[in-house]
Length: 343
Image (cartoon, rainbow, N blue to C red; front, side):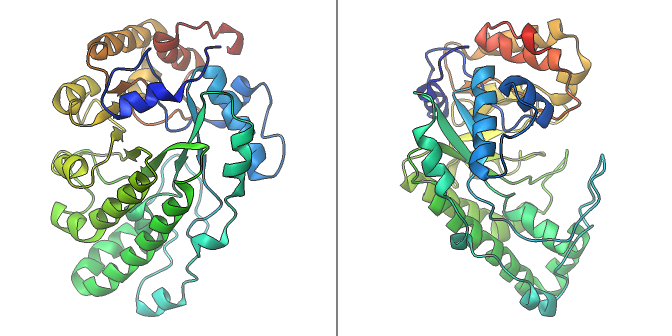
């Protein structure tokens, strides 16, 4: 097990060369956490128990951090069926002004963030937390309103839609303002899927009107605590990537797909302006042999060796259907470790 050193990821996020190949992943999965942590599930019911479980797993795999939520803050919505695909219309709660005014908006300040402080005393030397959000600005509005309804509201009642976005964005901003100053926190992720394979979910003009201003404020809040800000966003963001870099000023961008832009191309195109994180296409990781996965990852490390600004990982996350042997083939390209005991 290699010693964690968050300074390596900080160098990646500042577009510099880390002292050694550095891993980045948004999150893993229950089975993988259990295998790496050496226990089947979190050791207790409290949030700090989950922190310990996740931290132990990330450390065993060779990461310099662990990703966690800052509290149980989130936007209540109706229960939806947990299937292999998710409808962007199911579970909506806000359809008009009456339902908007009736919705019980959560107060981020009413939740308990103390585990972020308590766990700091237990973190291994050199290790930090990366705090993610309970979904992002666009994601939460889509969940509360429904994608089809949101598109109709753009035409029928844009003022109401703006109020909904502002109600979500202002609360997420407060959440990040609370989380960012904790000493245990090394960076923060704003996780907000924006696009399909060919374009953004809303036209760039509408993204600039409703979504981007809140992201700019969130990044500023994170930077005010002198922490790096990472954008996790799926989809084709080619039309708006300049704004992500130059206006919102994100330090790193995560989530890439080969059928949109392979990470190798993204690195050459944008790696000098923003850190490129992960990017080894999830379908490739699942369907290729461990040898092919390892080879591609080694080549990506070699590509970025002289310039830095890259952290190795998947294009999105590690769901349960990713074969263990393929996941370990990927990360061993950076760590050189033998993970056979987890297979």
